[in-house]
Length: 344
Image (tube, rainbow, N blue to C red; front, side, top):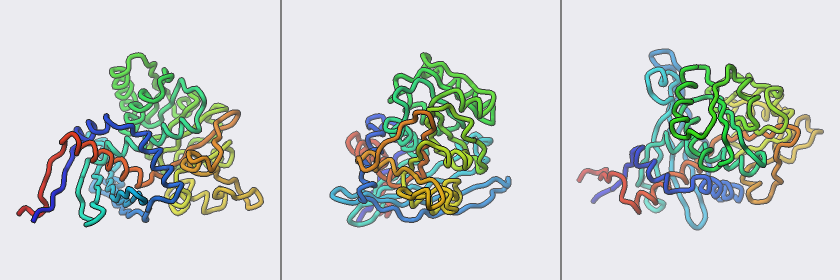
């Protein structure tokens, strides 16, 4: 008896992903999510301080696409804030696909790259649906691995973009990302801003990719008509959500139930309400989910004189769907190492 599992390292996962349309994968999952064809169990979360006293955590995210073509799986993504100083990416882990009949794990791929890919693909999907009609400049606040993932998709899906503005608390990281970007896309104009606020004001699209646990960016940071992708945890102050022209999320329940994030806290405090809440209830209401917009159940709102905010939680089903598509390509191309878990 054997129990085979295929293991895919990052380089092969990247090769497979290059044969996919990651934004189409994300948009398909968002539609299925809005149609109730997903399972989203509560994530497992464990935190500790390592020997350097640095915050470290492990997140286990199970998820499934249901319906006629079910997919079941898991992303295990771990991080320590001291990793970059050691020359490592902050976060890394594995993504797993289960056999829907036996429930056995059948495929494992390195998760760091694929996690960044699905995150960036969500940002592009939100921009195509809710962003300005023309996007010629983008500001990235935070210059780590997620910024690189976003740049790869910005250059692929937003061909009108010619200007990139960067900021990171670590000036060396900003300079390194600028050099990396220009080596790959020399047609771009890439500048490093002196402050986060200056970076935000430099473009009509602002993407937050930090690890901040303290809100610092106010509504007055942004141009009228700006689109703000709040991908990270706690960059935006409450006045941004309260005063935004529109606020869209990926899953209302996941955000509401997580007080570790600013929007979750604001919903629990009644400052921000679920969709269809009214001003009489004491706060401003979310406009809905991106999946509902893609299905035509909610009206899209593009920024005009105000600010439109996209605030995804990061749904496990996006990771599960992405690794399942990578598995399909790996099977077709013969990539990956097969291992018998029983060793018999």
